[in-house]
Structures are given as structure tokens and as C-alpha cells.
Length: 358
Image 1 (cartoon, rainbow, N blue to C red):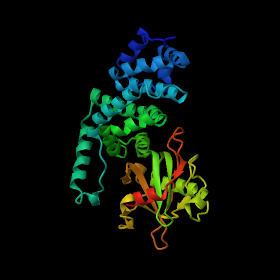
Image 2: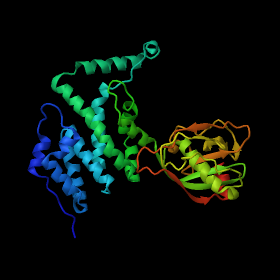
Image 3: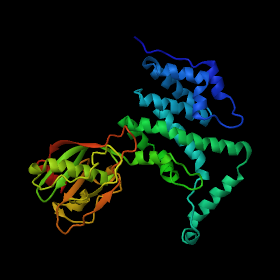
Image 4: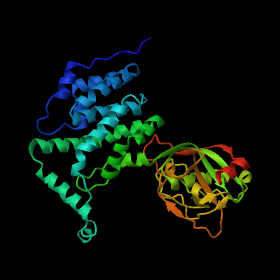
């Protein structure tokens, strides 16, 4: 049986392309309009949800940003209910990149007066952004305001699609221009976004099919799958709990003292501490410790650690005098679909341990 096709109604298309006079409709007002509510009712039918998403993927780039973002929001709710997260995602990437590029000239961080002389470039960027905003008037001001609201609305469905499909997450990270815009704009003072921060969090998340952990003191190690971890601190917490379950095979004594939310299921500020000095692969060469300051920086994404033999490698150095770190508040998921966890895959052989320390 072939998948159903869908033609969007003329009433819906007329509504979406109509110029907005006065205040923009709220999401509730928009979705209550008969052509939109009829589309949503049809889209909730699993037999038609894919056809609706495919039709919207073609339509949204042609629409003004605000109605496009509202339809994307509707699509996100379909994805949250089980619809295919990949169908609208390329369109979402295109729109987010296009809209942020348009808003970038109006975004800058404010520079405190006492810091102005030390950072003239940032001071000038702030003054320029402020001047551009103050020069906005009439239809142009409305356009920028609507675009700002559209970005905030688009973040929600983008989060649903990014974190419900690992392929989407990879494509998200591979869009370097978009990543640069998110990193530079999510925390600005002239157009202060609230939602864009969550896409920055999503960009920090890592997936590693085979994360290698080496313990030089015992000549052991393990390979794990890392799914949706926030950063290195988050990974350390999850690893130490997992390693405590395998301590006999690893030749270590490690009490299961990971903090109360190390499985990442909720919002926790529980503190954790390093059972090892966690280093990157570059700390070792030819089987010897050559740089005990080659730390795996806690706040950095897991995927940013040095690789050997194509694998992300962490070295758990067990030295009494090594620097040990404490941390808290890094384990909270940024979305219900993130599901951060580690899965044990296998132990390293002695030969593999030596090779990863070479």
C-alpha cells in the first residue's frame, strides 16, 4: 500500500501567506484557526503524519518566518508524539541558519564601562549593534521583531528533532555555519534570546559508539558506548559508577559513590568528585606518562578529547598526588529524549592497553 499524498488546502495557504496587520497571533490563536486546526487533526492520524511533514518541509521556506515557525512548532509536537524526526529536520536547519544570519548584525554582548578600554573590538561591536537596533523603524522593526520570535519558537521543534535521532544530531553538528551562529548569539545582550541556549546545550552533547578508557596502573581498560552525555564531567560521573561495577576485572577498588543523579534521569545539583586524574590520550607516549597536565577538561564536550586509532580515549590515572577535581550540576538532561547513559561493551586486552598508551 502506497503512502498517502497530501495537498494543502487553499484556505490554509491563503492564511499563511496573508500579511499580518497589528499584533501577531499567539500560538494558541494561530492553532485555533479552522484551516490550521484541520491540518493538525489530519496530521495526528499516523497514516498522514509523514505526508504532512513532507508537505510542510517544502512549504516552510516560502513562508514569512513567524507563521513558518508556528507550523514548525506544530510539527515538533507531532515528532514528540512519534512522527519521523528526520522529515522536517533539513528544513529546520536551513531556516535556523537563515534567520540567525539575518539577526546576527543586531546581536552583541554588552561591555562594562570599566572593561571598554581593554576590549575595544567588543565595545565597538556593542555600539554598532545598538545603533542598528535604534535605527529600526516601521515595517523593518516589525520584521526583525517577528524574526526574533520565530527563532525562539523554532528552537523547540529543533530540540525534538535533534535529540530524537542521532543522525540528526550529526547533521546538526556538521552545519558549521549554524554552530558558529548559535555559539556567538545564544548569550548576547542586545537581542537576548531565552530558548537558543538549549540548542547550544544540544551542540555540546556527544555520542561515542566506542569510548576507550585506559587504566595505566593496572594495565586494564574498557570500551563503552556513550549516549547523549553533556560533557566530560558528566562522562566521568557515569564512568566511575560503571567502573565500580567492574572493579574486580579492572583491578581497582572503587566504591559506588557516584552522586544521586549520575544516571541523568532528573535535575540534580549533586556533587561528584574524581576518583582518578582524568587525562587525554596525549598524556602518554611510548607507554610512559609524558604530560600529566593533558587533562580532559571537564566542561568540554566528550568528543573534543584527543583520539587514538580513531577512538575517543580517556586515561584514568591513579596517582595519590595527582590533581583531583570536584564538580556539580553537569548531569541534567536538556530534553526528555536525551537519555544520557553509558553501556559497557567489553574489556581491553593487554595488547590494546599498550597500543593506546603508545
